[in-house]
Each structure stands twice: as C-alpha cells, then as structure tokens.
Length: 262
Image (tube, rainbow, N blue to C red; front, side):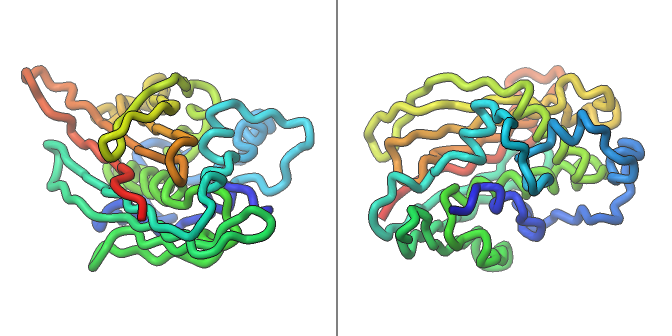
C-alpha cells in the first residue's frame, strides 16, 4: 500500500496563478534557504517522513500525532463506493486581489488492497493545474491536502522574495514540534459533526522572521473528521494584519472547505 508521502512529491502545482518561485529564486532570508548548506544529522532526523524528503524511514522512528493525522492516516478509508468530493477555495484579504475557485476529488475505483484510484481537478480554466497519475493512483491520503500545502510554501516564497524550500522546512519542523490537536465541531450541509483541529504557527519563533516580519505571524488550521468522506473538512491559513487600524481584515486568508459529496 502506498503511504501518503506520495502526496508530498508534488512540485508543479500552485495555489495561485501568480506563483513564480523557482529553484533559482534569490532569497533575502540567507543562504540556508537555497539548500546550499548540508543538513546536520539532527536536521535530517527531524525531516524524516515529511513532504517526502527522506525515502527510507528507520524502523524505530516515531511520528507524532499531527504528522500521522496529516500524512499517515488513511483519509479515504471511509469511502466505500465511487463518489465525488467538491471543495471550494477562497482567497481574500487586504494585501492583494482575491479569488474563489473549485477543487473536485473524484474517487473512481476501490482497489483490493484498500487504496483508491482517483481524479483530481484543482481549480478551473486558466488556474487549472496538472495532476500526475502518481498523486491519484493507489492512494490512501486525500491528495487535495498535499497539493494545498505544497502550493502554500510556494506562495510564501513569492510573497517574501525568499526561497520556498526555507518555508517548506519550517512548516515541517513546526508540524512536528509545535502543532496542537484539539477536538472541534463543525457544520456540514446543515448537520453538526465532531472532528479534530490541527493548529500550528511555523514562523512565530523563527530567528530570521525580521526578513519577512509582515508575514511571520501566519497560522494554519486544519479540520479532520472520520465522519465525513475523505476525512478533510477544511484548511485555513491566515496572515494577520499587524497594523494599528481597528477592525482590520487579514492581509491574506485562504480556505479550502468541503461543500458537497455526490
């Protein structure tokens, strides 16, 4: 059975039509953002199992609860027949023009080993992104989650003129060391469900946050529930506006929310 690590190998899908971060992007965050310095053994150990950086996992390695929730759980286990999940993506905020678009995850086949074959349409028209077969074939995790999170680090690279790999690493470390999981309830199609919320802020204590102070208070909330198909109900990321104006909206807020199952 394929692990959810396959989700994290997506490198060509972005969450915004404006994303332009590439390997050659110059960074104002310093040399570690370009990946030029070798990782220490401690850094390698911390990166195991996240975003597919390390292929071989030691037998005694222990993943924490947040990592299991995002990358190792069988999100699709509660799907027992072909169906379609419709998510709505909304970007808003005062920093730049927002937009809304749709994400369709279609479960096509249920395989004998418990995996699923699917099709994923991430955005429409000019924003529509290509999805490789590896990300939707023999899967157990919800591929919409992996694509959203990979796109998020590219977006941070674009906003800060930094290198996306820096934010990639910080997000992974924060998920392992700082993430909080708490019970929550939410309403889907008029019915209340119980679930779990994963919350973390990757850049709060970043020693280099002065280089991107405007965006350093960004935080992430993800809601999962075994009671809904695909397990993923919502992803929310918020970059607060730290100016002194009253009743200000966030600089940027992005949400991906399950709207319908058919």
